[in-house]
Image 1 (cartoon, rainbow, N blue to C red):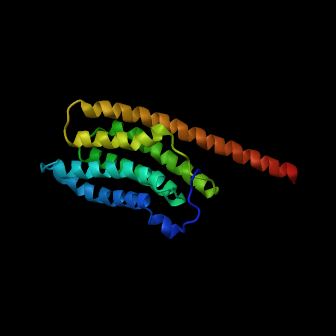
Image 2 (cartoon, rainbow, N blue to C red):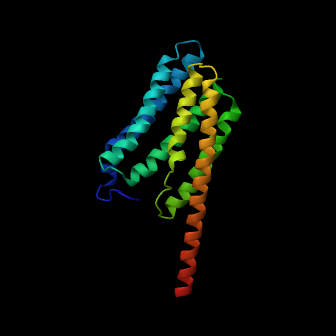
Image 3 (tube, rainbow, N blue to C red):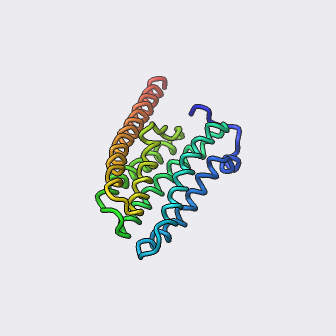
Length: 199
């Protein structure tokens, strides 16, 4: 991966600014869940919306600081996408259970992320660099985050528009990851064939 910091230990990688922001986002996810529950019971939705907005901000800033501070790490390449998928999927399920969004709206993102996690684990086990996200993949978590916030804030019409965009980005990024996986399979198969031929 271009610009990857190989000079840092695993512990040092966890302490970089972008990875600290990612871990902060994970902690905020657990803080957000009770806010969502109380909002669904009639309390103000502002704590949930503010927490969600701050989570989106950390998602934007971790990538920025990784590039700005030259802190692109292997830990970050694994931790950031996994945290995004767990948070987006977990929030989608929570919002469905609490009655904010319909089941069909989150089905696509849940299925896509489960597939990507399984394929990604296979790639990592093969000692390969984790999948590199394209622009739609980078925008997908943000678009779902905005959609979730709009639903929680009971904004009319807008969440369906952003939700449609989120679904489109989800499909595009899913196709991108599948193509990367198939390429990895072909490369691995080609290497094995060459090994047999040389042997």
